[in-house]
Structure formats: structure tokens, C-alpha cells
Amino acid sequence: MSDKSYLSASYNNILVSAIENKNGLKVGLIQLNRPEALNALNIPLMKEVVDTMENMDVDDEIGCIVLTGNARAFAAGADIKEMADATAIEMQLSNRFARWDRIRKIRKPIIAAVSGFALGGGCELAMSCDMIIGAESAKFGQPEINLGVIPGAGGTQRLTKAIGKARAMEMILTGRMMTSKDMYEAGLLTRVVEDAVYLDEAIELAKEIASKPNLAVMLGKESVNKALDLTIESGLEYERKNFYLLFATEDKFEGMKAFVEKRKAEWKGR
Ligand code: DAK
Image (cartoon, rainbow, N blue to C red; front, side):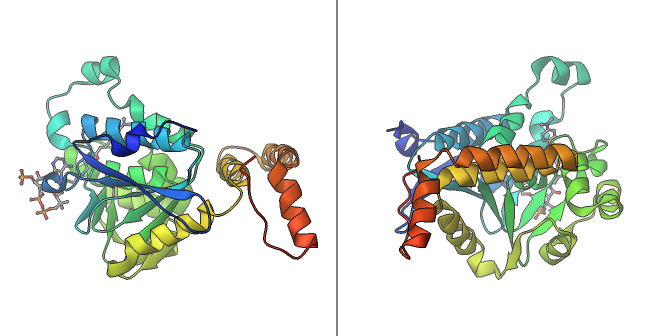
């Protein structure tokens, strides 16, 4: 049994819960909760988010994570007020954004449920997740150019890989906001849904994933992510190793036996 105390702990900038899933593991829900600042991502908030993701990652009752904001904003970026006086030397020495890099190490899938503004670091935070469900009226953008800087948490890299150079260049050099529909058509979003149901849809998708054998889910996520970094040759080798590795799990034997016996598999997560 993993430590569940993080679920009942109190937080200043986020809300945390675990949603029951009658068909499988629970869904961990993290809601950004600084509405007065459009969920601007200050250091205390990011500490709470990343620590909670890491707690959920090792919680054996959680199968998938949903990260969301509120109807008006997923997040309007890193906290500009917190950065306004910072110098290059101070940024380099304090490495105050280092925590962001830890999101990439989370092994369970994370779904961003986005409504309202997803700007700057908010867009980058959504892109650090594995899938994005967007409300119809959500707005995505990298407006850092209007502050005299460029994206610093993966915007130039992840956005370009997701939507291609032509459109990424336009977004990053103009700071213009794009709709969910634009972003879906460009390949950044998994789905665009009506405003009223963006969170429900994300939770439903997370429940479906959390009902699958979780070791296969983790290695599936890891292998897909490798496709973005590796050559096709190395990526295929990586996939093959993970495929073989899953033949060491009890769930592989159960899954294939259940198919042959024409019954529903009972996953053990082993
Ligand atoms: N930071 C701080 N406060 C913010 C904020 C932000 N990013 N965005 C909004 N707010 C605050 C506003 O200051 C205002 O507070 P009060 O004045 O009421 O105290 C409140 O939220 C409501 O905002 P508005 O009054 O401006 O609301 P509007 O509806 O008129 O406008 C807006 C909404 C989203 C268009 C506007 O607020 C806006 O343009 N916000 C800034 C968007 C932006 O430029 N975002 C990019 C920030 S730079 C890194 C990690 C991350 C980053 C970099 C590096 N590493 C890992 C190295 C990220 C950088 C960024 O995100």
C-alpha cells in the first residue's frame, strides 16, 4: 500500500482528489486553484502540482491523472509578477523552474482538461501532459514575445513537434491566441468538446485508461514518447524490448487467457 496522506493534505493553490472508477483503478484529479490570478503558475503552485503528480505516480490505487483549471483559465502562464524583477544571473543560479522538468518523469498518463486560457507556461504545462481535451472556447497561445522573451518550458520544442514548424513559428513569433478547433486540427489536442463537458470527458477518458492493465499503460506511454526523441530504428528496438518485457507480467498471461476463454480479464497490476 502506498502513502495516501497527500489526498487529505491541505494545499494553498490546488485541489486534489481521487475519483472512484467502478471498472478499474481510480483517477487522480489535480485542479489548479488560483482563480484570482487566472491560475498563474507561481513557484508554490508548481511545487504542489509536481509533488502531487509524483505522489499519484506511486499510488497503487491511481491509474491515470487529470490536470485541470477552471472554466475561465487552465493557466494564464508562469506568474509574471514573480519573474518581473528577476535577472539572468539570478535565474541561472536559482534554477527556480527546475521542478517543471520532473513532470516528464511521471510514468502514469496525464490528461490536461483545458477550458479558458492556456497561455505561455499554461500552454506548456498542458503540452507536458500526454493528452489534451479542450473546451470549444479554450484559447491556446505562447504570448511570451509580448513580454520580451520566448517560451522557456518547452514551447518552442513541444509545440513545434506537435503542430509543425509553420504554425509553431506563427504562434511563437506573434503571440497570437488559437482556438481549440485550430489546435485540434493542427494535432495538439486529442479532442474538442462542448464547454460544459470538458472535465467530464477528460475524466471519462482517464477512467477508461485506468481500467487497463497499468504496466502496459505505463510502457505504452513511455514507448510513444520515445518516438519523439529516437530514430525509427532505435524507437522500434525500444518498443520491442517493452513489448517483450510485458510478457513477464501476470496481466499478459491473464489477458491472453481471458481472450481464449471468452471472459473478461481481471487485472492485477503485476
Ligand atoms: N501572471 C501573473 N498574474 C496574471 C497572469 C500571469 N501570467 N495572467 C493574469 N494574471 C492576473 C492579472 O494580473 C489580474 O490580476 P489583478 O490585476 O486583478 O490583481 C488577474 O490575473 C486577471 O487578469 P486580467 O485582468 O488581465 O484578465 P483579462 O481577462 O483582462 O485578460 C489575459 C486575460 C489572460 C489575456 C491576460 O491576463 C494576460 O495577458 N495574461 C498574461 C498572459 C501571458 O503573457 N502569459 C505568459 C507569461 S510568461 C519556465 C517555465 C515556465 C515559463 C518560462 C520558463 N522554465 C521551466 C524555465 C513560462 C513563462 C510564461 O508563462
